[in-house]
Length: 319
Image (cartoon, rainbow, N blue to C red; front, side, top):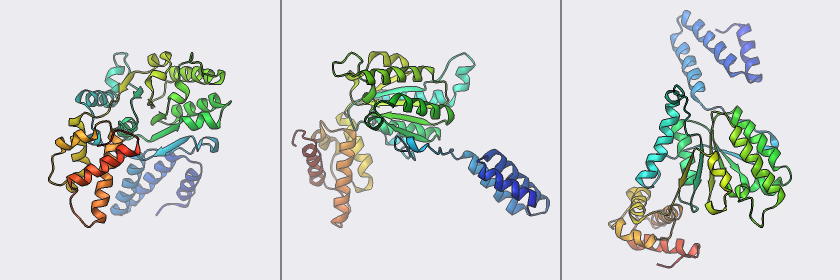
């Protein structure tokens, strides 16, 4: 049984947000229970403490940043990402360098930590950031750049400084989505003085950043980005629309046991021009319709109809 002093310290450490002190007292209680012959409860306490240490710490954001920084639980795995072999190797290299960064530091080198992902919408940029967070067991945060610019015009640079303070304080994966909202070329005619100042501030913050976090910027418009940005990133990954082979693989993966007796390779040509996300949506729609019709397999014609809907929805060519 815990002493009164231990219980008071335990409660105080909780309300003081002192997890280290809390864990120390909890382990002291476990040791006391073990000495009393209560090995079962002692083991349970130790397991709970170990689990809490392995669980990523969650940030409590300042009220002004709550609508700018979105925290999500990463659930994607590398096997779900359908990309070229070379792209997969580059992502694996980022993961390998992070996991073995101590080897690089011994030789005065640093791992890839600041990444720029470019490519059309729905080609896997956000999923890649989520996968990296999942593989590295780090919390995943998305900074909503379009909202940062539109809602806080005039104080965007100050908000960016607050965000980089969080990046330094709390290790995690930070995705700057819709990055071209601030990263546009400084010489563009439609550029305004405020956005030039914001971009200059970001360049300064990312160059000075010495945190343990991974910073990932994603953009759909590579040609709009200021050239000064590129040398601030350790790596630039370019995403493309899927090839026919990649489309067939994506269809097989997405349909899974719902796939009927048809060739994914032959149907892939009807998805030309669609992104990974659009093809995945077509597969999901086909599965839902199959379930609602009390059927067990998605047919070729059914999937073709869903792909046609995706083409029509985005104003692309008809099948």
